[in-house]
Image (cartoon, rainbow, N blue to C red; front, side, top):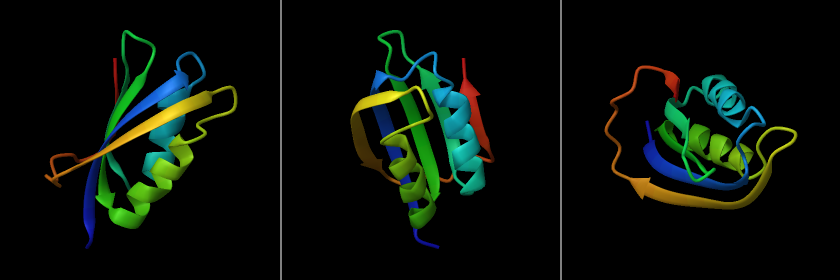
Length: 92
């Protein structure tokens, strides 16, 4: 398995539009593990782990997000794969 881990910061109108819930559904559909959370400065942050092609599918979705979202910028930082997650969670 070509495992991948990325840290995402999503900037734009991404809170109050079901971004976290939609990302969790997209991640689960693509067998991607990790978490997503809102930040106090109105950005959304996420860690994704899984097969590289599946992680890329979630990244592609994150460029647009759910209906109602406006993604102005998506910052992607590649990290060393750890394999620490057993599911995908929304952090509150």
